[in-house]
Image (cartoon, rainbow, N blue to C red):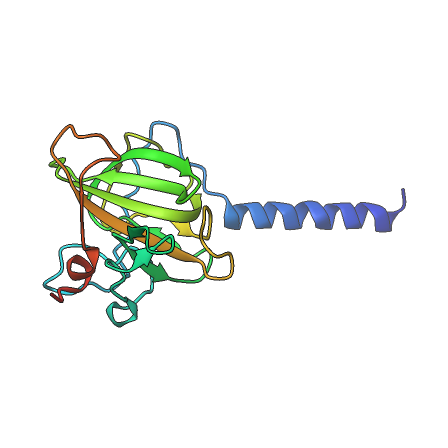
Amino acid sequence: MGARGWTGIALAVLLCVLFLSLCVRIVPGGAPEAPPPEPSAPVSDNASLLIPVEGVAIDALTDTFTQSRAQGARPHDAIDIMAARGAAVLAAADGRIEKLFWSGEGGRTIYERSPDGRRIYYYAHLEGYAPGLREGQTVRRGQRIAIVGSTGNADPSAPHLHFAVHVAQPGEPWHGGRPVNPYPLLTGRR
């Protein structure tokens, strides 16, 4: 191999090392988790929940809670938050990941339970989970937990987050509870 070949190899190795030093962060296994980022999605002073899609403004939300689905067979019982595929899905409140689940309707989903056990937050049609997300994990309001997608029965050309809130009794199953309209909880509008 001539000098040009060795120079090319050396340049490739140097570029790889530079790339890795900029892109990879090595954290020891026992290191504490970094605090969640400051919430960047707007939230009304009167609202109790953070808008769970990064960069979505309050005025971009539409109350679709009472709209019918499945040709009128059932109510929506949630709101759809339209967003670009891959947009960050944020925890709407502090809680614990109760269940990571796949269903035909919701696709890739997350069920998060509030610390007092009385609310279940449901995130559906997700493209993917945040790296390392697992059942039983505690999450903080504003922490990135997933990315927007169109899995399940969602229209592939209209990625969005299907977001629901259920009021539950402590110990009630992750799929239980009574649906409540998340729109006023996100916007402070009644």
